[in-house]
Length: 511
Image (cartoon, rainbow, N blue to C red; front, side):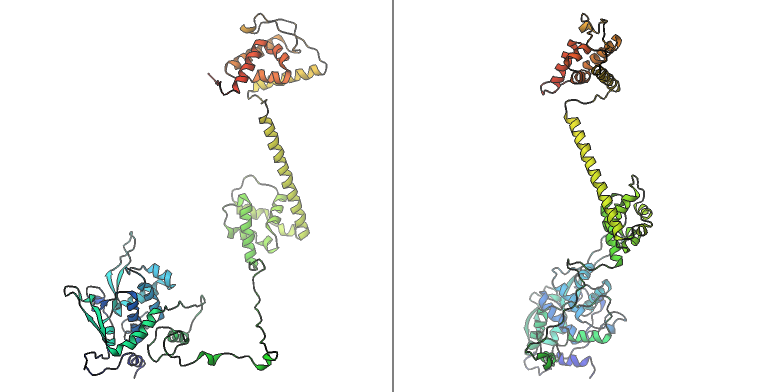
């Protein structure tokens, strides 16, 4: 008897006399051609749910009736645990319309492997097409929709009787109405197999398993012949030929002199106390590069691998990001950067030879931090001065001519304060509002034409709503000196407008 016929003979129930009409017989090889892999042309029946379909899958996988290599020159040699794992994913779908990418993601297999096992399930009569998927260029790929089928060989092997309840319905809608006594025990074993899941194998990436190891894994898996198999754990169905207790390791008696076994030696961990692994040379380069890209604005957007290659010398010398920033401070700040990684390569050239000791690097860090603190204080003073300037009552006029006039007025005030004597003695009219008012001699050092020009300029600005010449003069020289310079009427009008500008009841603008 051949190696394939032996498990078949052990799997199929022995034939008996057809006294009660429940006789079964040995089946031929199982294969469904491509033309019969559609729901309209199939000879099997549709499984009502995934549990009963998985019973048929385990029976086909363990019987050996379907051998893929008989019908194709490539692909897997037989239905095994991988096929059952793919079938488990299909049994959970309703409707059964899986995509190849979905099965690849769920099973961890390659796309070609998934296609192989789907083809084997169709050739074994366990799947039929309802709608075949399409792959049209320029359009989204459509997944195939399958129907879970029970092949007629399964019903014949277990003596399952089916009936067509509606004579107008197609043949694949047959329903189970009974089972032979010889197939009940086998059906119970298949039910236990269908109830448990085939685990995903745990293999190391890149590990090469020998053909012997693969055969051993297939023998120990859940997909084997139902009767007469050897299993490795008592949780599986059947009687194990080798007991696990016989392989239990017992320590020698000299290890138990004190009544207790010595605890196993703990393995040394490769992780640090903080939970991070110890980095090698390349890891330190990449960590320094990532920190530099985050800290330096002109390195934003640069590729971390390129920055790691540029800073490889200082990273190998044990530099930190603070050391690099201190060295860049010593080299000088930059204002315009066209290519950050190239500039960093130029600035770091020979850095590890200049600051070759931890003490030198520590001094550089102190200088850099001192400069940072000085710059911070300078910014605080600038903000404080700006705040005091804009929060005060007086602001410098924007007109360059007015600024010159104010500077001249301040110079005259300083001259008077130092003892200078320059008084105006001539009387001159300065405008329609002060035609009868003589020019006072209180503003010393100014000529009559200068006073007239100042009054005309202040009057024109006052007509446009600008009271800055009058308010500046009042704030700096005082109300009395401002009236001597611009006249009482002009000063009074300017102060009224200045007070009204701060009120919400009055607005004015340029004409």
